[in-house]
View 1 (cartoon, helix red, strand yellow):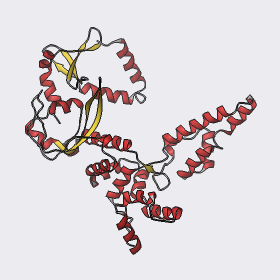
View 2 (tube, helix red, strand yellow):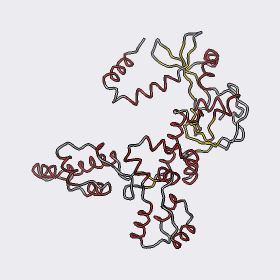
View 3 (cartoon, helix red, strand yellow):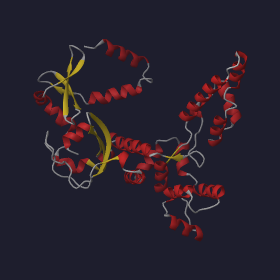
View 4 (cartoon, one colour):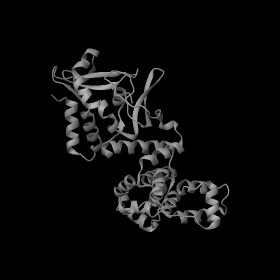
Length: 369
C-alpha cells in the first residue's frame, strides 16, 4: 500500500530523475537499512536514542508511519540485525582497514548530537556479542573527533590513507585538464612569485605555506636554497599534499554566486528614476571589479566572457577553472574533516582492499568500535 504523499513523490522522481538524483540515492541507501521480520510480517529500522541506546522503529502500514517498538520486538529482527550490522569475531582482523572513520553520538545536556571520529587500527581482538560493550578491536588508538584534532594531525592522517595508487585513481576520475593541473603544478614558479612579491625569505607566511607542500623544514629549505639544491618536482606525495592543503579560489559555483550578488547590487543601486535603472541594468556585470578580478584569476578573456554572458550563451561547464598559483587558497580545518570523511566513505563504498573504512552509528554501537 502506498500513501498519497509517497505516490506524489514517486511521480515527481519519475518525471525528473536528474533533479531528484540525490533523493533517489538517499532512498536506496535508507532502504538498505530496513530490517525485516517474516515471523510477524513487519519491517523495522534501528536508530540511536538521545541516551545513546539502540531504538527500534516499526512500520505501521495502517497510518503510514514509523512507530517506536518495544524491547521484546528486537528478538524478531535479531537475525537481520546481525546480518546487516554485526562483524563476526573470526573475521574482524581481516575486515577493518588500518584507519577508519565513523559517526557516533555524544550527549550535550538534553540533546544528543552526531560527530565524525577517526581511529587507527593496530590489531584485532575478540568480537562483541549483540548488546554487550566489550571492545571489538584491541590495540587500536583512542577515537578522536576530527574537528578537535588540529590541522597538522588531520593532514597527517589523510596522508596515511592517500597512497600513491589511491591518489592516482582520484586523479584518473578528474577531467584530463584538472588532473594535469595537479601533476604539472609549478612549485618553482610559486617560489619565484613569493620572492618577487615579498623580496625576502625570513618570516614569510607564504614561504611557510610553500614548505607544507615541499616537505622541507625551514632550516633545510634555507640550506638547500643557498646551495641551489632545492627540488621542485611534483612527486605523488607533493601532489597529495596539494590535494589536501589547497583548494581552488574560484570555482564555477563561486563565480556564478558572485555574479548573482553583483547583479543584485547593480539593480538596487539605481534609485533615481526608471531611466537610470534601465541604464544601470544595461551595464550588466561588465563594469564589476569583482567579476573582472575573478576572470583575471582564471585567465579568461573578459571580452569573450561578457559577450557570451550578454548573448546568454555562457556555459560555466565550458570554462576551465585551473588549479594554479593564482587560483588556490588554503583549505580550512572544517573542509579537511569533510574531505577526510568523504574519502573514508568512498573507500568503504568501493570496498577498498576488501576492507571496511567507515561505520554508521548503529554499527559503532553494536560492535563497540
